[in-house]
Length: 167
Length: 326
Image (cartoon, rainbow over all chains, first blue to last red; front, side, top):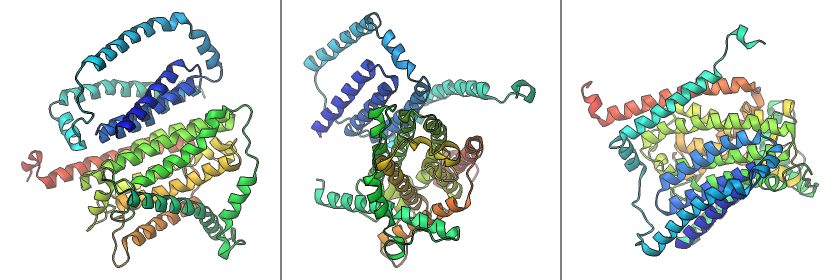
């Protein structure tokens, strides 16, 4: 099983690198989808089947589709624009910060003690009891955050009166 | 220890029969549409014309496989594969008979939903990569339709999951030994079936490929075997929709006298014929009607169904919230 983990990890790493370096926005997003699927596989291998399924349904299936939807509408001009944006000026700063983090990860791998690859098996029931028991405040806060989004979307998409529509 | 031999045989049987059945379905649909429209349909090759799909396949293989010069080549080429792969992957969790399943996942229902949401990519990026206005319009419609109906598809299944107390498809079938879930979950069944038709973009929800408005929608630019893959993918998703309806609401393999697998195939066949009948008799929706219908009718129906089911399950379990009422 260990080899499966390393393959999935490698795929997700390479795909993520392509997300950042690809100039074509739709291709970059497709690579991001691949990275998310690889992540779902890693969750599965770690014993979190429920998280793996949700990773694909919510991130891979719903959120990324919306991202691609918006980016698709940009059309072919987007590639040229992306090229002009991708200057060393833009990527040097974040790269240095990311390198610092990479160094930290390397140090942890070299020095830290390694726990086993299997985390506690989380069943759907256990997750639900945890979410609606001790973490109920978090769930409520998240739903309160989503509610303004819903109301905002309703406000933007509401049907104007017949005179106001002008058609 | 995994029994590799058993798994390999199961995979081979399921893959082989799915692909053959999908091919035969093309002939069956044309034949049945013919019957319902008072004409013959394909009846020349083989008994009753049943080898028609084989002839179609040979023809489609020898056709020119053209990639438009203005298309996004890499994406254009992988898209048809996504349709077929996601549909076939879903069959991995479909239990045809006790122990006759490739992967008896604990999250079988969620796996099915995940695969159907990944299948959306084929339609979306297929239309985009073709770089054709009609195809692009088709994929824009597909995004709105698939995203909307995916939501209710998940919600409508949760009532069944609540009653069975499990996401495992074999457990769900086992829980229907005495009563099919279509009786307590009738509205869940209705929502699921409509959402399934929309996900498979079948009539009356086939706006992404409405030929009267969009040439052939998202696969306008596809030819040869790539078009064939889209075509087979559509029939695979019909098979999958029928199989999932049977498993979740119509008792799966349960039934008297006949062996379990036979019952499963018989019930599945009934739903396939129903889906073809719907295509033969119902006109297409208008696109805004489709979305309004989805969000304003199906969505509340699925939510109310889930709420009532949850309440009844808690009532029966004697939850503390309900003991005051007893």
